[in-house]
Amino acid sequence: MSKKKRETSDGIVYSTNPDFKITYVETTEEETLSASEQNLKIWLDRKQRGGKTVTLIKGFIGSQEDLENLTRTLKTKCGVGGAAKDGEIILQGDFRDKVLDILTKAGYKSKKAGG
Image 1 (cartoon, rainbow, N blue to C red):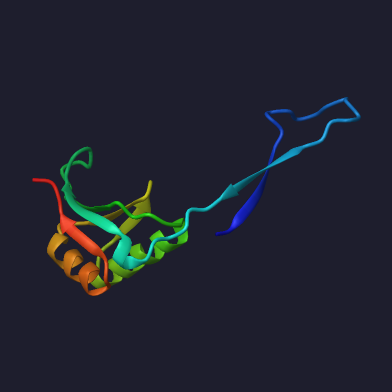
Image 2 (spheres, helix red, strand yellow):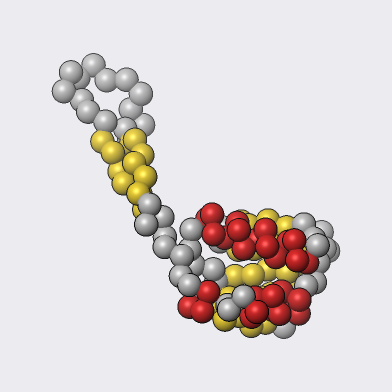
């Protein structure tokens, strides 16, 4: 688990107080669960996307770096564009069956969700 120190000065830019010290807050990244412990759901979505169909993969628990690596793998194997945003993987087009096969072969617990 990596720890990062981030400066917080509560919005203070300059202080005339000679005893003022910047406090540090340690933020920790979430540890990535193993593939067999992940419970991923594969959705098909058209809402607020101009009528375009996208495949959403939700439920990934782990670091942003691992999420981006999984996204890169899925994009490459499906041959499409996509992104990793807000803990979700977005792939352009309807690739639910193909993504389900790829994830189950990689050892992830995954299933189709939605209507």
